[in-house]
Amino acid sequence: MVDVNNNTPIVNPTQYTSSQQYKTVYILAEGQNKCTKLVELDLEIILYDNFNTSPTAIEECEVDNDGFDAFDLTIRESEILNKLDATKYEFTYYESKNDADQGNTNNIKTPTNFINTKKFNQTVYVLVKPKANDCFQVLPLEIIVNQVPEIDIDDRYLICFDAANQLVHPKGNTALTIPPIDTTLGTKDYSFQWYAGTETEVQNDPNAVILLGETSPKFNPVKAGNYTVVATNKTTLCRISASTIVIESFPPESITTKILHPAFTSPNEVQVDVKGRGDYEYALDEGPWQKDHILSNVHYGMHTISVRDRFGCAIETLKINIIDYPKYFTPNGDGYHYTWNISSLRHQANAKIYIFDRYGKLLKEIRPSGEGWNGTFNGQPMPTSDYWFLVEYYSQSSKALNQFKAHFTLKR
Image 1: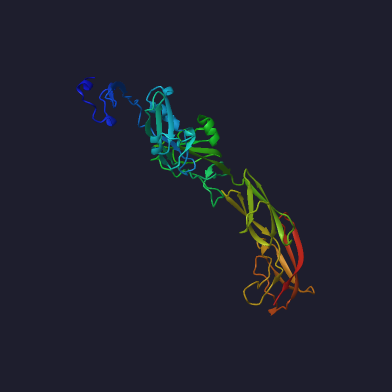
Image 2: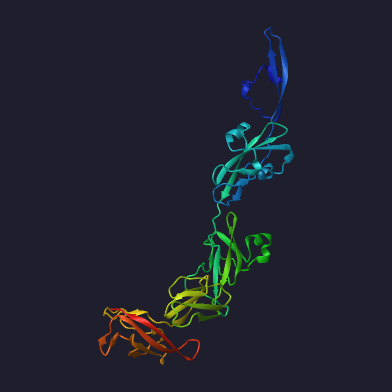
């Protein structure tokens, strides 16, 4: 009122700064007729509430590594209010600071399930308005998508045992990877815990399946089963898990063979019988592996039969001899098939072979362990023709002496 009396008006009423929270100023209005009126105007400075203007960033752990995830932006409201009464404030969220400053309707409609629109890191803006007045504040809020590396382990692994149930290293290539199960992550950035169970079992009751002391990036199982590793990022505390199945493989405990057809049956078949805890496959010589334990199309001579568990931990082999005779020979000096003999009987020292011409004349007596017949009689080459033989031998199934007659062809 003193200023009115002294006629010292406010110089710039459009930019007046008050030094008091509550103050009354006076407006002196003068009409054209020089009549005046004095009006009081009460000024009040509303102080901003003591919000936390630097709320903690919201972090989510990425699951598919595309850089995007869903966020509940409202979880920082209590931290922002800094113990103020939440019922007295309204929150609105914006992607743009300009929109937030204007307080317009271009806001985030579902702040409890907001998917970031910028990969990995984004700043959103929180408009906090008291219900009692229009003095709102705009605060930045960081949201972060933490990348989680994939644990690159196989779906299945294989451990091999011997007949004494001891772990062994496989003798050859296997169908599945041999442990250790390696996460390929380092201990500098991650901590690890292994479990003897599936991921579901770990989630439901981790203490029931935890492997105490197994806290390395690699793990060597000693028995079959489900295994899960949980890796935790030491900085972000993001957890990633992966599971695998470990399968056991056992070698055959015993292998027996049975030649299914009599000697001199061409081709023959061999039945392979195996005792053991595995699921076995069979191969003849260098041929392909098969699940059928009957090996067909087995010709005369010595053969190798191989048996393995289908996962390939160990291969067991044995020899079998198929007795038969060659149907022809060509003593023409080229070094191929130039003598005739029944080599599949060469291990029978007492076996004898008698060779006749078509009229029954004895041309040669030979032993299977010898060089065979070269197609001559008394030093003279015999002509192209069929020749007969009689062989005396002992069968593989009995000790009785057997005889077999048949014929073969000499070709020149």
